[in-house]
Length: 120
Image 1 (cartoon, rainbow, N blue to C red):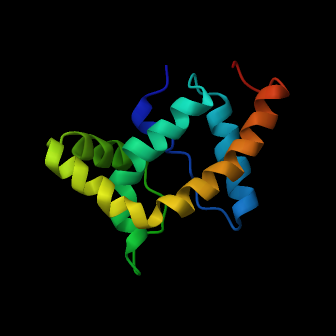
Image 2: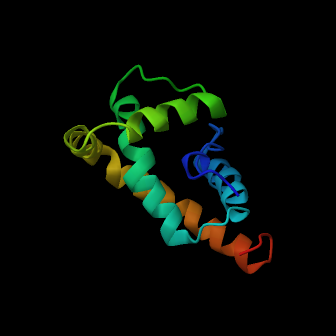
C-alpha cells in the first residue's frame, strides 16, 4: 500500500504545467486513494510542510528524493498543534495556486481512472 506521505512525491518538475499534470495524474491514478483523499493529503499535509519553500524567491526547485520528502513530512507531522496551525496559516497565500494546479491534475486523473488505467 502506498505511504500517505509519499502520495505526492512523484511531482517531478516538468517543462510545463500540462506535462506536469500528466506525470502527477499517472502516478496518482495507481494510488489506493480516491480524489477527495488525495486533495485532503495535498491541502492538509503536503502544502503546510512545503509552503515555506513556495513562498521564498530562491526556494529549492530541484526534485526531492523520496527519502527527503518522507523526512520533511515526518518532521511536519511531528509538530505540535500550534506549529501545525501556524504552518497552515503560512500556506494560505499559495493555497489558491496549489488548488488551481490540483484541478488541472484532477481533470487528467479522472480521465485516467475512467479509461481504466488504475485500480480505482
